[in-house]
Image (cartoon, rainbow, N blue to C red; front, side):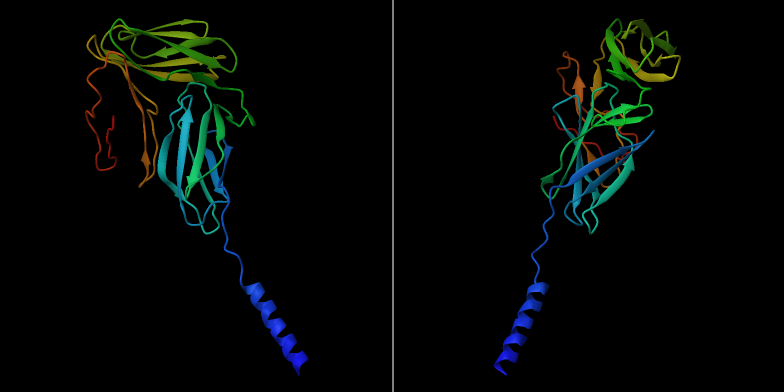
Amino acid sequence: MKNFLRLALAGIFAVSTLLVAAPAFAGTPVLSLTPSAASYALTVSNADANAAITLYMSQGSSTWSHIYNWGQTDGNGHFSLTQGLPFDGSGNPLQLYVTVDGLQSGTVQVTSAANGACTNGNNCGSGTLSLSQTAVALNTNQTNVITAYPASGTVYLSNNNNTAAVGVAINGNQITISGLATGAASVTICANSGSQCGTITVSVNGASALGVTFSNSSPTILTGQSLSVNVYGSSGNTNGFYISSNSNSNVVNATLNG
């Protein structure tokens, strides 16, 4: 009888040991990216379950922009979203990482390319024309030099839709943009017989206007998300920045800090 009781208790202890498991802790989140011709599949794995994700991005700068509530992991700590990425045309790699519940992923480095993208130096396409700057604000009689980075071929001017306001001169890979008169222009630069092209948006506001540029001039966000954009002015801008207008305040709310 004693032997039977001893065996029964041992069996109960063994069952209890199997049923009591250590609490599950997620490891460091992992961010991976799969490029395609026009978009990028960003995947987060190994993160806390049902947790908000913040996405951080930087290109050629020590300043990181971020999107709060970029996504939320599922019950397995996984999230995936296919979207475009805000390359600034400089040719510098875009760096991305995420944080989930205070834990930070490693940084993924991506370079824009016409046939996809170079991800951490892999899967690199060979048909891209990058520009050191894609948006320029000038005064009349002011110039700005932009560098083109073609994959191959000679750089040339394909189109300037307002030659009265904006002048364009090309010397090798150096593009000199000149403000001739008040107005705006879209300048298309190409290489390799038109297989590689990039566009520069130019605004000429007159002698009293001061140039303003942005770290991301075409941001894309989802409902409920927020995004930080840095504003840069010329050295003569001593009056500070302000929001002049918002064409659709029902859709987008903008605030300025600094």
